[in-house]
Length: 272
Image (cartoon, rainbow, N blue to C red; front, top):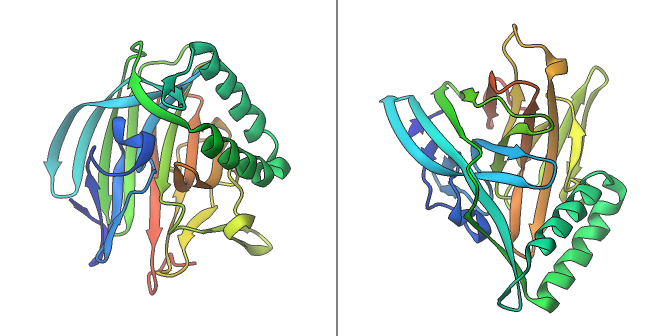
């Protein structure tokens, strides 16, 4: 357990969660005194590799606890998403097709709400399910987590991705609990609740994801020596058939970098 405050802490647990993510490694899971925020989310600081044709997810290789506020995890990038239709394994071409559909969906924010509704209907009717299974190894990624005073420092060191492969760090919580996105700029802030919090959109690094009931949220930041233009941030939330996540992703031009997850709650100085 890595404490963040009197009633917020993080745990490292590969068994937490639901759906397809139960068969892959997780980043750190956010917990509140009233329970665990896992859902179908990836947790905080989970590396995935985006290749031209597929997304590679990790399995857990090793965990080393350094002290009360620090843990180091080595992830093996070797899990792929496989599909079943009515209980029958789908051919590999179906996985390629689904990856293209996902890319199409992510690039068209105005279509996403309708697309998610269509997806949920088709998945339920045809009994389409996905699960994580072992695949080809794409190397390892070492992540050091250091928690202190409502901030999680995440230091990443992975194998250099081959172009056009890209290392992405996921920072996720359950979408059923975290239903609000807050954007900030020089003119103030704007709140997006429920369905207005789209499944996928690029955003500024100051964007926050929040549980409005508990007024617990988080946003990302970079060390002063990191150049913002070298990172791409996206926010998203999906709740539906076998979906229950919300969060922020950070894609980097490098495979070695550091960033922060800044948490806030009612009464904290960073509270929105």
